[in-house]
Every structure is written in C-alpha cells, then in structure tokens.
Length: 213
Image (cartoon, rainbow, N blue to C red; front, side, top):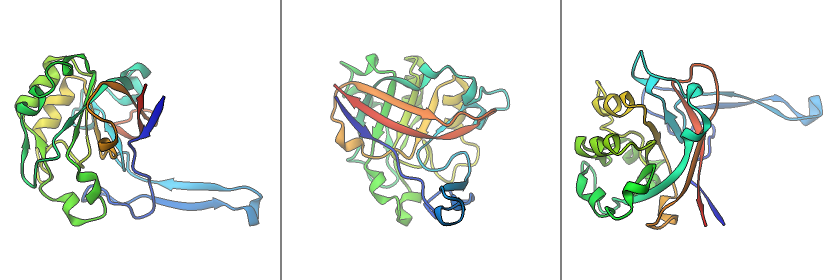
C-alpha cells in the first residue's frame, strides 16, 4: 500500500484566497517556560487544502459536521488537464477520456499542475476552471465530491459563484488547493479528505491523501 499526501502544509503567511487573512501560528506554551509545546492557530475555515460545505454559499446548506464520515472517503480518479493554460476551461471532453472507469469513481480530481505556482501571483490568476457541463456530469452521476489543485472551481473574480451554488446545492463537497496529483496515475484509488470537525462548519481544512493498493 502506498499513501500519497495531497495536502499543502499550513504555515505562517501562506497564500490564501484574496480578501482573507493568512494563518497565524503563535507559540502558546514553550518548553523553556512551561515544559511542553502548544500552538495557538488562527485561520479562516477555508485555509490551505480545504473542503467547501453546501453551507459555504447557501443559507439552507448542510454543514460539514452534519455529514457522516463516509462522505469524505471513496474511490477516486485523477483527470489529467495539465495541457490547459491560463484562462482555459475544463470541458466534458476531459471526462470522456476516462469514460470506461470514471462512472465508478465517487470523487473526481482535476489535475491542472497549478499547485506548482502556489507561492506566485500566477496561482491567483486565470487558472483553469470547470464548465457547466462538467458540473452537470458530477451532479447527475451522484459523485460525493470534486477536487482540484487550484484555489477555486471557478474564476477568482466571480462574485455570484454560480458553479459553487450548482455543485453545493446538490450536496457534493468541493476540495480545493490539492497538490501532488501528478504522483497518482490514471487508475482508481481510495481518496480520503477528512475535514476538521467543528460545529456549523461552512468549510474546513483537510488532510487529503490518496491510498494506492
């Protein structure tokens, strides 16, 4: 069994969605003063590799703590979109390349390669995003969720977030800011993205991993 970490490390000053504050990790207790270490962590619920709940954009949406734990684990496939460039769209043709096995996946993860730009301005620019037809496929095929190695499933300048509304209305979850999808290959594998469980969670940071047999 091989376990591949798909999670960016949360650290002081790391890139976050424009308009939010980066996380802070402050020493609360130290060996020298207290005989043990403890850290005070201050961050937004959508920091780093994280999961969006339906409650993120919908007043009537379910929060992550209300989902059963099996919602966050399942068979997944990585769809290779690494040939796309700035401003390009992930269309249904990318889904169709995997038509023999993608219907058996519970999570669809889109690999654009954008994770390598995490500490650059390009990460917040015109990264590839899914289109409506892809969103409709994910909904109609009863997936548990969608994951990407970019900061959002839609354009960073989008104000009304129509794709978020469409996907989350149907109780899928969205995992954003994944990494290392290039290490997995093109077959089915077990995907785990377990969010921090806190009450009324509109979203939460996750530790996402791929488990390969």
